[in-house]
Image 1: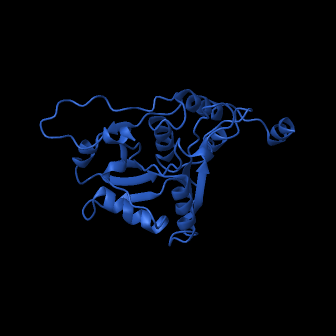
Image 2: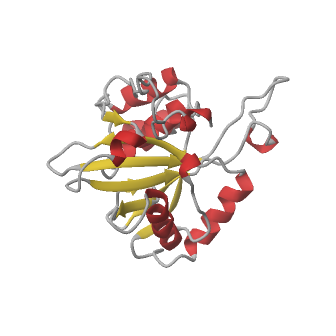
Image 3: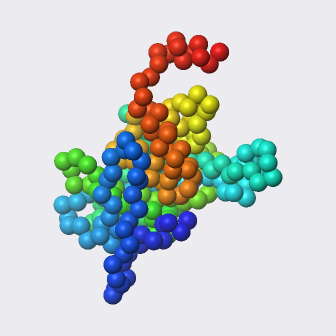
Length: 238
């Protein structure tokens, strides 16, 4: 995950950093990106939220490969959480910088919701200023897992302290679009997300090359079209 390493702290004496990557998907408002160094220099009036995506699978895992052809395309897996309020989000939460580093605070929250994963600064992906009246900077992490590791975390999450209270369960994100151009990722993006979670999902899918950028744009555009009545959708599927 080379994209993660490019956004660490600014070394002493270093020159200007290259522009930070942006989402660049039509129809999705951009959030202001920050380097980790810039985010850590924000004053005490700022709150810090830390969340993580744990994509599972690798190109070497044959179960993630499409069928047909001598070089099947890898199909990674990504997961989110269904929260107690019915909104989709990523594991994590707010971190009190007076007592915790970003990673220590994140791991404390992950231990309550997942129970068996610890992230480090090497897993840091990006930071963004959130919109709205509150002064919040959202930090995002990603750790590449094998499919077996992701499955283990999904099982562990069911037995965590927060399961059934703060978190209703893990949900895998469909990283494909069906022939009707709505099934899969477009329909998933039509759900309700908490805070910056939808932006972070799209950003990570792009930066980590999990979904081609043009497919992301198509999925977002499909969610902005008027939806057919459910009876018409059912008729079209038969």
